[in-house]
Image 1 (tube, one colour):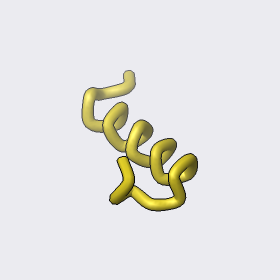
Image 2 (image 1 turned 60 degrees about the vertical axis):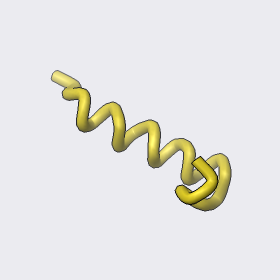
Image 3 (image 1 turned 90 degrees about the vertical axis):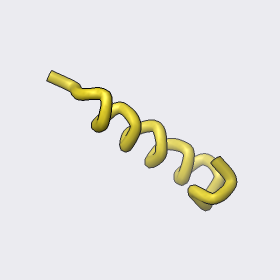
Image 4 (image 1 turned 45 degrees about the vertical axis):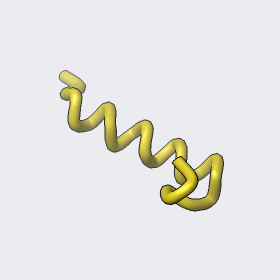
Length: 25
């Protein structure tokens, strides 16, 4: 079961990959 926390981590991880930096999220 995917928790809300895991979802946030996944979004942050994807954002980091796409932008190259989590600060740009």
